[in-house]
Amino acid sequence: MHWQKHIQIWFAFFAIVFTTSFSFPFHVVPDVGGWFEPFFNSRVEWIGKLLNIKNDSDLMYHSGEDSIGMMINTINIVVFSVLLYVAIFIYWKQKLFILLPYVKIYLRYYLALMLLIYGFDKVYKYQFYYPEPNILYTDFKDIPQDLRYWSVMGTSYVYSLFAGLIEVIPGVLLLWRRTYLIGATVACFVFLNVFMSNLGFDITMKIFSFFLLLMSVVLLLPKLKYLWKVFSGRKTEFPEDDSPVLYSKSYYKFLKVVVLLVFCYESQYKLIASGSINDDYSERPNLHGAYQVLNDAQNNWNMIYFHRQGYFIVEDNEGLFYDFKLNVDREAHVLQLTTYEYDKKILEYELNQDTLIIEDSVNGFHVKAIKVYTYNPYELN
Image (cartoon, rainbow, N blue to C red; front, side, top):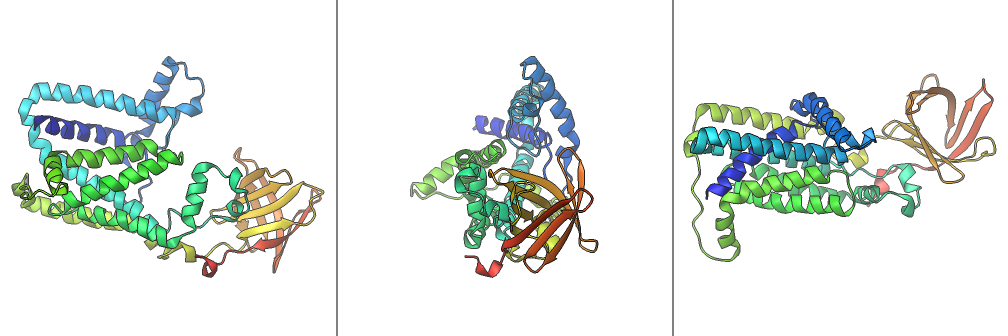
């Protein structure tokens, strides 16, 4: 049906522009979106002024995170891609359909890359890592809804492994034309679950996860009739390949090998960098843990937390949290704290078994605390 072809080609136009409008944390694949994100941000800011949106932070977006700006950007690209497709179709007419085999390859491989990256991040437990000390010592009711979901997921390696494998498997299947239909079908259900989780727990990737869900549906469009017959129990022959000649070309085979190597390295980058196949067993920093303050009269401090990603967090007696970027000089026994306003403060520390002393001798600052929580991976699950 022609309408399916039109949708597939238009969606490819939309997807290419959409994914180049914001950065994505790639390590090997070039982050083209990072290059063009400032341009798209400027268009969004201009429209925001027309709509009288005064808060600039609402218009900013990064890495596909949800915001008013991301919604405006998405609508902009939908309109632009529709106009672009209509203009090109008026000029090329049916000749535009020669792009269909390449469109299908693009949809397959982009979905496969996303599934492999997110899937292996779960398999190795890099996405849903075990909750940090400050989260474990925060009342459940005080944890934001999205962080509750993230933290609970991080307590189970078995489920993280399962969730990762059901993404990795369709990701691999999508890379081969004889199995892509199964992969795309499974991917559709996987992304539906991801989107509903993001929607239900207010996780700030709803637009991007819906985009991936829509991409898997668009990839399946020409085969919907066949899939309906299969799921309804009627016998039917497997549909023939759309472009057998293309797949036999030597340049296609060479490019596929290159792409597979890049995808493999990209999806395994964190494993290569960390050397840990299960993040639960990754070594934590020396000071990592939770400390109960013993002398709180001076500063109203109740708890001190050392976050594994380089944060120093203080909880006061009213349950309010204050966090600082942390740099530790273990040789000089110095903590360098940096605020979000880039103000710096230097504190001296001494750790004697479970007793921590933090002081600033110049200003007469002195805090004594005792460690009440130490991360032990062998006590998990």
